[in-house]
Amino acid sequence: MPFSFHTVSALVLRYLFLYTRHPVRFVELIFWPLVDLLVWGFLTIYLQKQAAGGFPTTITFLIGGMILWDVLFRSQQGVAISFLEDVWTRNLLNVFVAPVRTVEYVAATCMVGILRVGVTLVVLSVVAAAAYGFNLAHLGLALLPFLANLLLFGWFLGMVSTALILRWGQAAESLAWAVPFFIQPLAAVFYPVSVLPGWLQPIANSLPCTPIFEGMRTVLSGRPIPWGIIQNAFLLNLVWGALAAWFFAANLRHVRKTGLLVKVATQ
Amino acid sequence: MPSATPILEADRLVKVFGDSTALEGLSFTVAEGETLGLLGVNGAGKTTAMNLLLGLTTPTSGTVRIFGMDLWKHRIKILRQVNFSSAYTSLPSNLLVWQNLAVFARLYRVPHPKQRIDELLEVLDITQLRNSVTGRLSAGESTRVNLAKALLNKPRLLLLDEPTASLDPDIADRVRKLLRRLQTETGLSVLYTSHNMRDIEEVCDRMIFLHGGKVLAEGTPDEVKTRFNQASLEDFFIGVARGEIEAIGIQ
Ligand SMILES: Nc1ncnc2c1ncn2[C@@H]1O[C@H](COP(=O)(O)OP(=O)(O)OP(=O)(O)O)[C@@H](O)[C@H]1O
Ligand SMILES: [Mg+2]
Image (cartoon, rainbow over all chains, first blue to last red; front, side):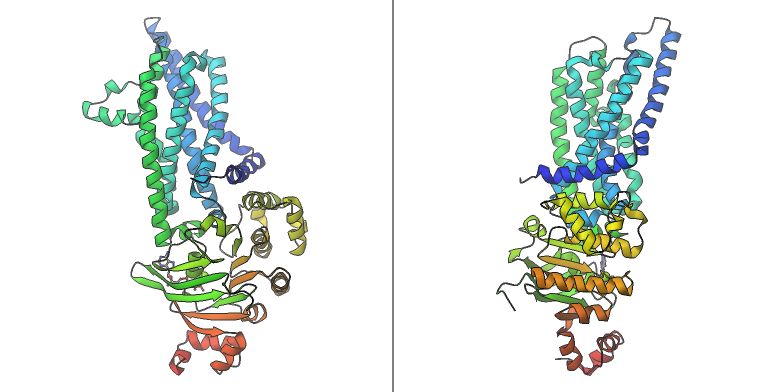
C-alpha cells in the first residue's frame, strides 16, 4: 500500500502548531489525568491504612490500572479529537481534496495519539512515583508490550469513534468521549475478569485491553511476566485493527456516496 | 482549443441522493488554459458537480477524467495538481495564516515554501495578514487566504466554488484580474461557479448553465445571450429561474 511519511508529517505539523499556539491545551492533557491519579492514589492509601498491613501491597493495582487506562483513553482521544478539530474548523474538505490518502490521514491522527499518550504518561508516572511511591518501572520488561497494546487498541477505538462522527455528524460528537467508557466496565481495569458474571466474561476477554490489565496485576503481584497473555492481546488487536479499518472504510465509502462527507465538513 | 485531451472530462455524471436526482447525466469538458463558468439557480447541482470532480462524493454513475486519468483510479496523483477553494470551507481558525499555508505547502510538496507563501501573500495583497490568527480575519480576507492556499501548488486545474461571494468590488476585481493573469501566464484551467454575472462575463471563456442537473445552455457568454435573445446574462438567468426561458424552447 503506498504511503507517504512526508504527508503524515505535514498533517502532524498542523497539530504541533495547534498545541504550541495554545499551551492551554496541555492543561487538558494533564489536568484530568492528575485529578484521577489523586483520587485513586488517596483511595489506595486509605485502603492500605484500613487493612493495617493485612492487605496485600498489590493494592497499587488501582494506581497502575488508572495510569494504563489513561494510556488507552488518550490514544483514542488523540485520534478522535484530531479528526474533530478538522470538523470544527471546517478544514476537512481542504484535507480531503489535498493529495492525502486515507491511511495517511488516519496515521497522522494516530501520531497525535502517541504524542498525547507520551505527555500524559510522563506526567502521571512522575507524580505517581513522587506522591505514592508507585513506580511504573516495576512492570519491567512487560511495560513496553503493555503500552503498545493499549496504544493500538486506543487507535482502533479512535477510528471507530471517527467513523461514527463521519456517519452521524457532529451530533455524535459526544461519542468521541464515550466510546472508551462503553468498554471500561468490561476491560478489567480495576478488578479481575473473574468478578464479572459468567456470560460477560467471554465478551470482556475479546477486548485486547482486558488481558493487559490482568497481566499488569500479575506482574505487580511479583509473578513472572505472562507472555502468553501479551501474545493473546496482540492477536486480539490484530482482529480489532482489521475490524476498525473495515468499519472506517465502509463508513467513509457511505458518506462519500450520500454526500454526508461534505455535509459534516461544511455544517 | 490548445491540446487534444481535455484537462477535465465529465462524462454522463448522475448523482442521486435518496429519491432526488441532483445531476441527470451531466457531461462537459474543460480544455487546457480554459476557464469554464458553471451557472445555475440555487440547487441546480453546481456544488454537487464540483464535489464529484474533487472525489468528495462518488457518482451514482458516469466518470470523471482529469489530465486524461480516471479520477478514482489516480486520485492522489491528480489531486497533487489540482486545488480548490470555496466560500464554505476555511483553514483552521486557531492557527496563524502563515502556519496554515506552511502546512498545506508541505502537503502539496511545494518547493521553497517560504518563498512561495510570501509571493502569494503579496499577489493577493495580504502580506500584512501573515501573522494574523486565521479565525479573526474578515470574510473577504479569509477568502483571499483560502485562495492563497488554492494557488500554493501552482495547480493545473483550479476549482472555485463561489470564490468572490464575500469580496468587496475592489478585491473581487483584483481576484478576477489575478485569475486572468494566471491563465495567460501559466495556462491554468479553471472551473468556476458564481452567482455574480460580472465574474462570469469577465473571467470565463465559456459557460454552461445547469438546470435541474442537466446542461440547459452552453457557449461563450455572448453566444448564450444571443441564442436566447437576452440583453444580459442576468436577464437570461432570471428568465430561466422563473421558467420563462424553458418555455421559449431551446435547441
Ligand atoms: N448530501 C445531499 N443529500 C441530499 N440531497 C442533496 C445533498 N447535496 C445536495 N443535495 C441536493 O442536490 C441538489 C443540488 O444541490 P447543489 O448544492 O449541488 O446546488 P447548487 O447548484 O450548488 O446550489 P447553490 O447555488 O445554492 O449553491 C439540491 O436539490 C440539493 O438539495
Ligand atoms: Mg453551491
